[in-house]
Image (cartoon, rainbow, N blue to C red; front, side, top):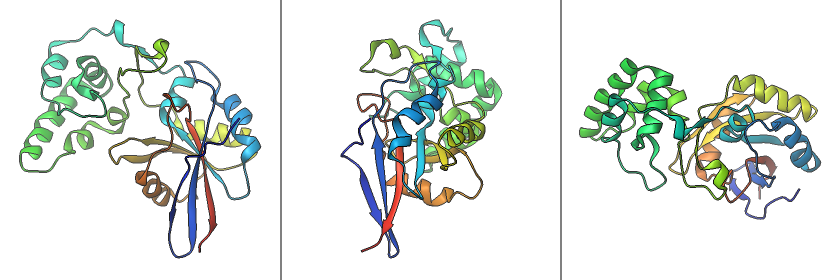
Length: 233
């Protein structure tokens, strides 16, 4: 139950916000995220802390995983995936299996429309329209990627189900500490997808986490973190 040393901070005139990643054991499909939270996070919480949870880890705990080996890739997925831009952080929807999951979630008409409009917008220097039109559930798909743990390499992970309720359940187990579930990536994306209460400063949290993402379910094993405010200097 160690706090990681690679926390990061960002400051403004009034306060310093610090994100402290918390190391856990590996969260596997079907594990109880609530039990993990009580065991690994609760002992470190202080007044005014906010708990940040990786949406991928929450989805794993809900058993929201798809075995990539069982995906039957259709012609549409195989075709559209060829036009996805290369990304140094992973294949994403360039992998036909991930594209097929996107089609299964959003439907072939919506994905085709998003691909056509998104491709045209990109030609005019306006990227990002595909995911805006395809929807947040598509943007949150974590595709088949290389993983330190061989048992997890095969999984495609859609967005967590009922993320607000999941955040509320975690918060209740932590005796009321506020909880956000976030989709944060390594290319500047930061989105709160679930929160335990409506009063949380969502925009501020998203902006801070966009600065850097200290959470990870890979070699880091830090799928949760603690946002802590400190007096400014």
